[in-house]
Image: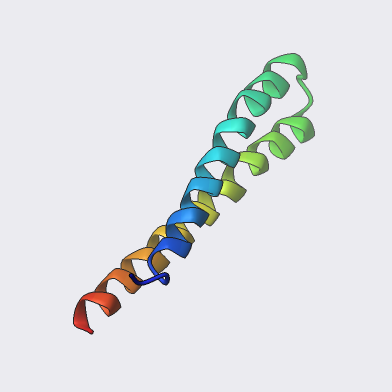
Length: 70
């Protein structure tokens, strides 16, 4: 069994779990505080896991093509 496919899968699960935990917090911060800087900080909390998710998906796709060729 190849382990190089399961590592990106595990990273994907971590990224999704992190994004799921941060979304309610970000929404609560935006509603509670009207300050623009607080909203921007809350927004960055969402985009970081989102970017990590995109990288993980891209890596997983490349590894799947690589594994299929071998």
